Image (cartoon, rainbow, N blue to C red; front, side, top):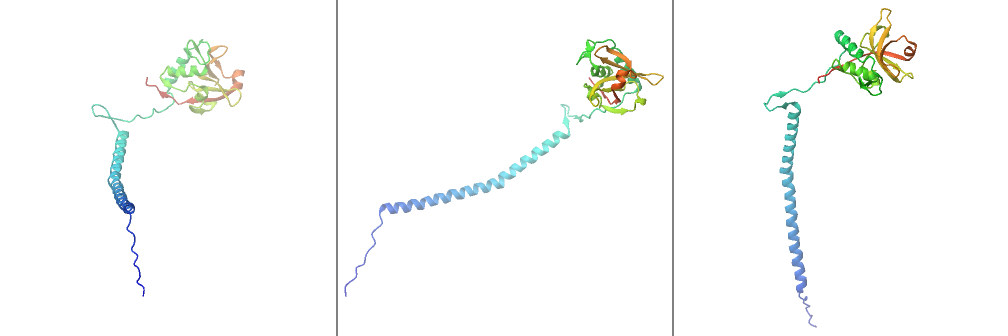
Length: 223
């Protein structure tokens, strides 16, 4: 019987051993940094999120406190400004606004003007109301909607006379100055040809273009 030869495995080379060591050490490093990153994310979620929520609560509380009150240097509370209420003119104010409008009699017409050097129709209305410290819109189409419409037979001094030409397009505005005994409406206006003057609503030219009577709601001017 022939003796069998036992083949011994060749020893591993130094290169293979170094390769295993590098792989093992690299795996340890990778696991170390992975765990470190995981702990960092966990701590950030637990403590950083709580701090962020605390800051948001403080901001909301500060914003609410600022909006509710404003404090002056002497720590007194300043109330919120309330909108200025609009209202109709009193009888005394009606008389005054008509007087203010008549002061412009003879002033020449000037488009966009609002002084005695030259004035247009809506400028006359605005300036007359400003003369008694009442605010009213400047353009005629806004003046035609700044209050309430009233029937023609209920017109009174201080009301606005609104005209349209063509129909549906606001083109002119005047102010009622007097109701004559026969119920004829007399109004003051600034026209291209005659400037500021008074005329009757029964005149053919104006009667044809008449739209409505409008009673404005005005604001008290503080300046």
